[in-house]
Length: 248
Image (cartoon, rainbow, N blue to C red):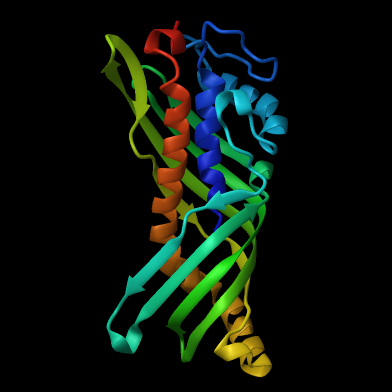
C-alpha cells in the first residue's frame, strides 16, 4: 500500500510552487511562474519542506504524513469459483515522509504537473475481512493485517483548471491520475482460518511469496482511494487563494 506517498508529492508541489501575498513561512521557497527552470526550483523547495511534513503544516491545513491514514479499500470481483472479496479498514501507513523524487516536470502555463516518486520503505497496519484464492490456497479470515513494503514507485499527473467564485478566479485540480509500480512486500494476516497457527503460518508465507498477486487485485481501488484523498488536500490549499495571488 504504498502508495500513500504519491499523494504527498501532490500537496508538496502545490505548497512549494505558489507565491501568495501573505507572509511566506521560512520553510517554503517560492518559485516564480516564469522561472526558466521551474522544475528544479520546485525540487529545491521540496527539500526545504520535507522536515515539516512528518508532523504536518497546520497553517496550510496539511495533515501529518506519519502516520498517514487511508480510506477503506473494498474489492468485489469474479464468479463463485474465483471470487475475491476483501475489505481493509482503519489503514495507517508509516514511512511516507522518506520519499525520494526521481523526476518532476512542471508546466505552469497549463497548470499541469507530472512526477515520479520512490518510497524506499513503508509499513502499514489495518483490519481485514478476506475471502479469496491465491494459486491453490483459499484464504479466509478477519482480523489485524500488517505489511512491510520496499522500493515502491508511483507516477502521477495533476491538472488544474481556473474556476470563478464570487467574481474571482481560483485554481482547482481535477482528480489526479496515479499509477503504482509494485516493489517488494511482506504481508501478515492474523486470525486466518479462525486463528489456526499452522494453516495461518503456511498461508501467510504463501501470501508474502505471491504478494504481487494480492496487491494487483487491490491496486485499482487503492489508486482511486489515494487519488481522491490527495486531490482533496491539494484543493483545500489552492482554493484558499485567488489565481492572481497564486501566480503574481
